[in-house]
Length: 392
Image 1 (cartoon, one colour):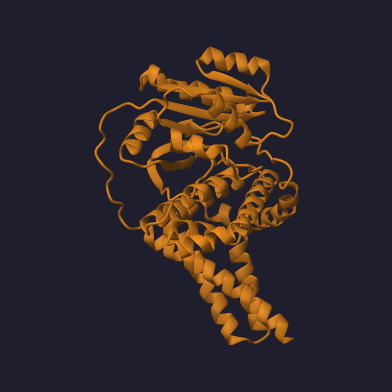
Image 2: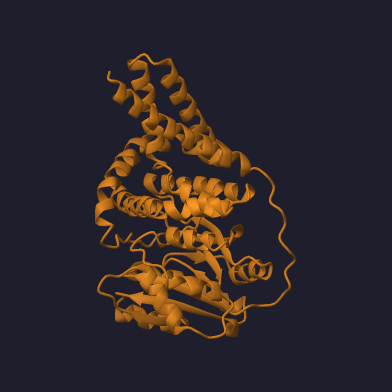
């Protein structure tokens, strides 16, 4: 084996192992108790709830019907529920209006979530104090607006809520839900416990209205706008708070095709923003803005579905070339990765679905590999994840 090949293998294995150690650190940190937030002042802030809906006729009526029950829990005069209708049928728009939602019709040559949100903020300029972003399939807890007001009253200007799985009818949906649960524990809760900003997840997000308005028109993302928004917030010195008591129920992808397209869109956004932000990360580091630096470095993480498989391959490779150092490093990295997931995922859920999880691994690994092929397409077009009506 050539020296160059050995060096490349060492760098890759070290990178994967370092990622595993980082996840383990976050998993351990997530077990620390959170500091209580301030006492709610009781003031009901005026909220703007925005729901971008791109060709989501199959789910938007159901979610809106449920979410409009917020009117019976929070003063109707203190919030507007706006569905941003991009490609919805007229019959769907009429039903949404009948349910009490406001419908903002938009039409773009190339649709993106950012463009929809920009159109909504440009139109809705009343005296709002907070803005909440939901996906078209999201169903919320009825205390959503009170909880959002509470966190805003405590001085948090950017908040990520808990996106709980709404469905687990297929093995892919189950694994997608477990994957998000693990990421939430580590990248939201764990990061917060270490003093860093939570990640944003695209929905279940609450922002100070004026802060969001000042940033949304700076964004240009085709996909992964939450990554671009994370970077803009932390660069400005805004801390992103994780709030596990702000709960939205989110539909998980139910087949490998949807999984591959979704992950391809996410990976393209992740690595694109990583390379674009390296310069600002170094500048932030020199200025003492560790939160922004950490957020950029987080974008360098490997795909979490592929990382364990790659470390398994690394162990086999290291044994094959008879390298004790690489074998030890690979085993250490794999152990750290698996331990981090075992720490943050509910043991009862894992035990109950062990067979399903093991059977799903090859399917999801293949889906993650296919996702790499979707990365190129997502550079120029928004790869929409189509939602389906699910029972809950």
